[in-house]
Length: 602
Image 1: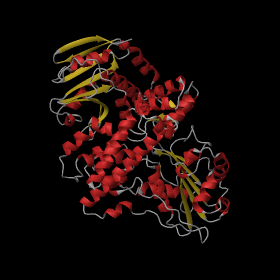
Image 2: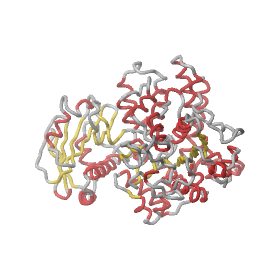
Image 3: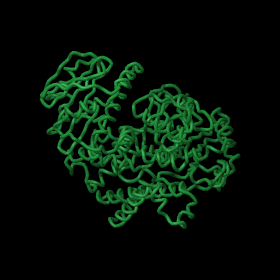
């Protein structure tokens, strides 16, 4: 087992190396190898597919090993989740389903809460109004395939109900849904639609079928209107929800995305709209018995099942599959707050890497307007701006940029019609991938005062003024200021130094806005944007208060007060306080070593 894991890991490492610089490796191929793939795009897709296959194999092997280490039956890893469905006719064949994807071993969750919520929408209790079509849209790694298979299993529990599960990626080129259905099931598509009993069609990766216009404009629309009686359709797609991508526009009540939204309408008395979002109980089921069954583990996974699985795999592998209680929790926390974790997650499918965006621009030969708009949109979303799909689509290159960004999972469209990253980890991957080493780093760890004065002086006073004028929403304004400061900080620090937004406190009572982590300690930076008293806010770092437990030995902290024209002056050991003049033209930094005055960039 160890030998096989090592072989798979070694091959995966080689593929990742190739994907890290695809242009150079493509040029290095022989003429014969290039001819086999026809063009660079086909080659890139084949390498990406191989990477995903190797990751799944590595994960499965690790989990089988962990099952054996725990004296559990390894065959449980690939136990089938489905039973034979009620046949439409006696000779109706049972399709062979791949039931273990995303659900193996100890990292498995049966997603009971989520599955039952969707089942109630399709087949409500007496008196409830059914949804004949459920359209679930989420980026890569968001758990669509696993949910589709678990939903298939749950729906087949009814005695007289037929459930057909199709993976659209297994269709032939230009093959209509009707022909694909008949080829897989040996049943007439027309007879399936006309059948009077309860039946369900579940199509995973439905975006592959977007070119079959008749299926969407005729069959799906008719099903939405209840034309097929007790037929239900569950369509799962990587992109195309709400305002962008899909051949038809679905009603809001029939569309479900990555995040949960409170919405009592059409939910059969449920107060929360179901989604792909991982529930707390489901995460505990995945993490049970592992080192990540903690509050910090849950918060890092950000309700995202794909991120959760990758973090679980990474932590268990780094600690040789130790179980809960066998490793010092401080060591686990150190790993979870490391650049190594971000680096590991960045290699996953659909991660918004600066390099990946450039590779797609090159491989698809996108024009300059679309290329510039893609980068601009990613930066704006990272800044916390509300980027409405309809607004972006009406700009030069906007429509094509949205299609590429959502198709590849770099961003997704939420139920408010805004583009956003799939999780905080996706945001951190994007920010980290944009970093470049400075030409020099003339600051020591103890020189936080000089560093902050230099970093803040690089902030734009006009942009800070614009944030104040444009945003009545303090949360959005604080996020924009946070990202503005983040970008100036990383221009001064080596890539080896971790700079991260939203660092959860050890007491789990809140988050610090920015943390700079060196080998020998941390700088903790808090931003003050609203009317909270600066003195009271600074007290949170003192003993037995909100932030104090997060302070590591030798750590230093600062409060940057973006409220204009305040008169406060705070002096504490290992503490810096920054305030600004009107219109953010200049600032002053107070510390135990004295005052530093500086001007901001225009």
